[in-house]
Image (cartoon, rainbow, N blue to C red; front, side, top):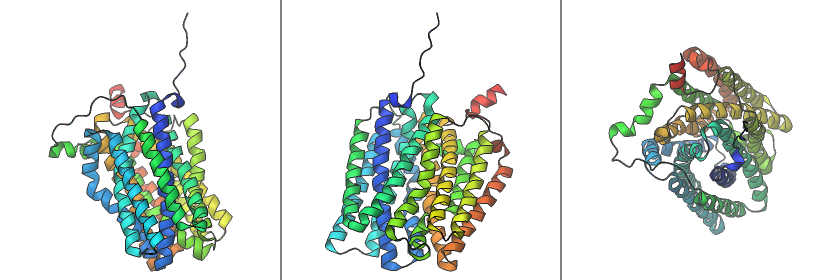
Length: 414
């Protein structure tokens, strides 16, 4: 008699659950600090360009450190790298708390804190993305990506909203609470146990360091996925300008700013929860391009809105579309990349995808300084739609992807 063996679930994967909690806590603390820093910079300088500089300052470490990060993530214990990055968040929070307590807060000090956080995030994000897939069986990777995304979205909802509320009581208290979250994250990462072959610690060569670039270059689907998000987010980002919308356009103050920052994550969270139970299995390529187009439309709607409730609604739609796109893109990257190259590929993916958020903030701030916040966001939304159309023509194989399947397997079948 055949007995059906129940399929494993994500909740049964203790290392992944621990790492999920660590991700939640770390991202909560990060976004609480981001709300405080963004509001303080705009209060001190009243400059859209300075808000854009926050993104540029975070972008620089990702560019300079990409090859080092990727090599380290494939050669050393990824948990140690993640803990080191989170310890740097702790240092940034302590500096901010001390500056607020002593009354020595300044534009340059805030930029210094942003730089520290940018360096830490440049190490943390690609290393964490490379570590997560080895914590679950291969069959659960796409669901793990959706659950991993949900942890981020929960934090992006709760972190800014909580940060905005606490900021009204005391800006310094925001730093203290974020410090607690970083400590929790470090503790849970320490508890994670990884069943993974010992990493290859051979001496680095020029070829081994560049292996991630070469791997992506020879796989059109990966190249198309990574560069699509790079240009869409580069043009369509609105996060850096939210303090302007909160104070000058919608008149909702720091609490409203926290809600605006949380709204995209609310839409993304709902989408991620649904995808963790009902993953996308068919017509993957077409669905990815459809939600990228929706992202552009939602960005345009936000630019034209003068209503706070409507702005929250379209930001939620923006976040929902981005979440589906993220799950598809990151699942493709992780499934098609062997573990011995995941660190280097994830570092490049972060450079192209994750850092496009920060570079996009600089672009938005610069255009807003020239033309105003509303035209800047409007141009970004139109640009996102244009990029989606061009990429459908440049990467037809990407549009025709039906299922999550390694390219090598597909080539053997055909």
